Length: 274
Image 1 (spheres, helix red, strand yellow):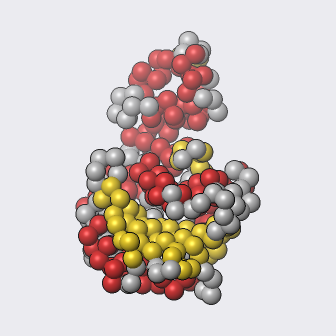
Image 2: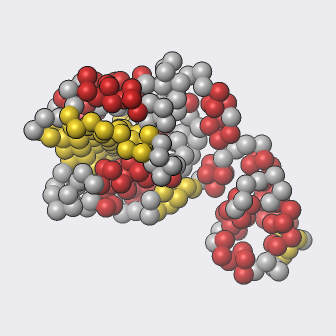
Image 3: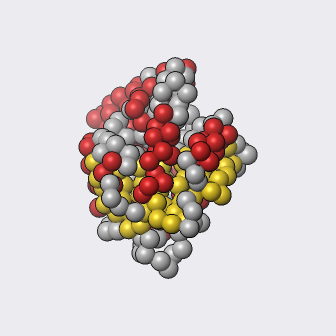
């Protein structure tokens, strides 16, 4: 048998900082704080072997979030699977911009398109309990994951519908529509590097310039927005100008791009006339 602190020292070789601790904590069903307080304890052979297998998969490139089945986002942990995109911290800017346009004291309708694990929809539903949030996704498997996350968070003001983008929402009107759609070009070299190799390609790539799904959403969303309703989209760092142009072409007003903490274009917004 091996001591926890010895295993961690060896495991940190070839992994990013903190990853070995996450994988061992997952193996043992414990917190990382517990690991640090019990470094002199020994693991049984079965636990050590399971931990070793996870380490090998990580060193081969498999994302930690898929190995543990979890990813932290906003103020909660989400269950994730290879059927869902792994939520990124930068998408919290999309949530912040959404909440800034949703008064907490009003019963508003919000649509989240391509919800994946439910990250954006659930954050909005948690912070705006009076809002009714409807989230769509073309993947039934992803919707099962998202619905499970909603149950785990005990959020009753969000529902999930199967279908492509706005198709499941025909005839409805929303005060705000938000989406983190695919926006990587099909031939982008990043798609065969790092964690992206393991994530669902249809949640990442969208045509030759990465804008195919964004064009669809911008073209269809205005018809489903209530007067003065907002559309918010996350997009690539070099796509702000193109997305703003598409929004203006679609008749949206007050169009602007919001930058992230590193001053990079990240989210574009616009709204229909009152």
